[in-house]
Length: 262
Image (cartoon, rainbow, N blue to C red; front, top):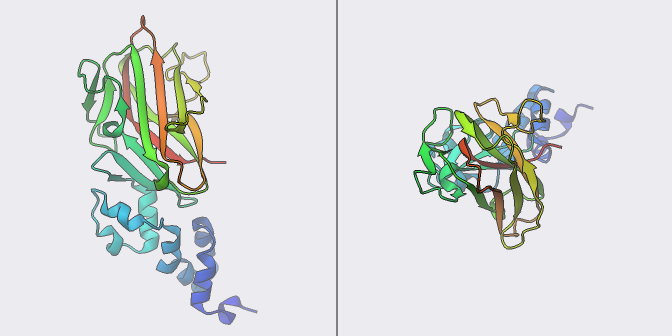
């Protein structure tokens, strides 16, 4: 029996809304009835975060996005075009497969030791950055960078990975032999887990960083499972100190949190 005859369109939409964005896209090619149901605002409203209107209203993007686009188009717009929020200090996007939230804390939102000293760090502009400004390291011995984000804004029951998004200027030094320690933990409850990351390894060493395809590199700093969003403030930290070797030439766009692929 043809299910599209037996079930009302509203019932089909309700069933599809309980699946995933990927499933909805697949079902849309089954038949015209399924396409109408799978593309409906009802279905895609369920795939958007419950607080998406508040997030968009807190962004520098045109708030007419909420009304000018269908919910499906809005979903994929947020997947492909991160919006800038929190007075330009963070960006927000959706992970295409699941619709879970992705955030990047930009340079202006990071806590950087000596970050307000122009001899050590400067804020500059790059056309390939999603933010108006990025942080460029002039020189330091004490390298200490942190991003902080409240777990309540993250998607629930989701395993997140934290990534440093960076690049180097042509003249760089101090990151090819000395690893940086990274940690991801709840403020006040440091789990002590650390990774040692070589940001600029020599050619004969394993490279952990990946090309993002947008003019930037990224390297994973650690993971965090967000169960109920009530753990408090999540800290993503990078640290290295050497009193004899200076570091310079690093450019940081931000630290990104996104659901980790299995």
